[in-house]
Length: 244
Ligand SMILES: Nc1ncnc2c1ncn2[C@@H]1O[C@H](COP(=O)(O)OP(=O)(O)O)[C@@H](O)[C@H]1O
Ligand SMILES: [Mg+2]
Image (spheres, rainbow, N blue to C red):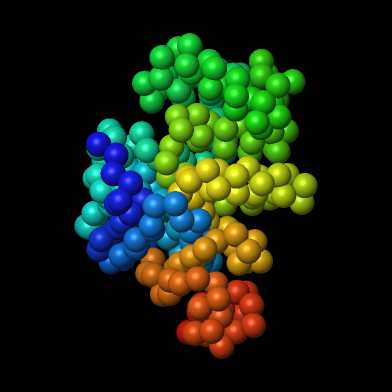
C-alpha cells in the first residue's frame, strides 16, 4: 500500500559491479523525501544512470537495497509508482505516438478506455496532437523527447525520474520541458533528475547530490553547498567537489 510518510526513495549500501568488473556504484546511501525536487549531478561515467537503473529495477544490484515509498524497488507496487524518462531515447519504431502511450498504460494495467483517455491528455499537454498517428522515426528530436516524457507520466507515477531530459535539446524546448517538470512538482510529484546544466539545477532543485566515481560525495541544498565549499555558484561547487 502507498505510504506518503515514507521517503520517495531510499537506497542503502547500494553497490553495482557490472559483469566486466566495472564498479559503477559503491555503498550508495541516499534518501529523497516525498515531494522533493532532487538533482543528481556528476560527470559522465560517475554512475548516475546505473543508480537510476537500479532504482527502476532495470539491473540486478550487486549489494544493498532500494526502497520506493517504503516498498522494495523490485515489487510490482514500487514499479507502478515510478516513471522513468531514460537518457537514451528508446521508442519502439513501429508504434505511433498514440500507440506508444496506450501500450505503456496497458503495461501498467490501465484499462483500455482509461489508457486512451490518458494518452489524449498527454498528447495535448505535450503538444503532439498533429503527430499522434506518426511513428517514432518520423518525429523530430524535440518531439521524441516530449513523447518520452509523456510516456513516463502515462501511469501517474509519484516518483518521476528524468535522466538528462534536456541533453542536446534546444533552448526553447528546454524551457518548455522545465515548465512541465516544475508543474509536476507543484502538483506534489517527487522529481529526481540528472542534468549537466548546473544553473538550472541550482534554480530548480531543492536538494542536490554530487556523485563522483560511483560514490556520493555531498548532498545538500544549493545554498548550503555553496557555503560549505566557499563557492559563489553551484558551478564553482561542482568544480571544487570533482577536483577534491
Ligand atoms: N552495461 C554496462 N557494462 C559495463 N559497464 C558499464 C555498463 N553501463 C555503464 N557502465 C560503466 O559504469 C560506469 C558508470 O556509468 P553510468 O552509470 O552510465 O554513468 P553516468 O550516467 O553518470 O554517465 C562507467 O564507468 C560506465 O562505463
Ligand atoms: Mg548517464
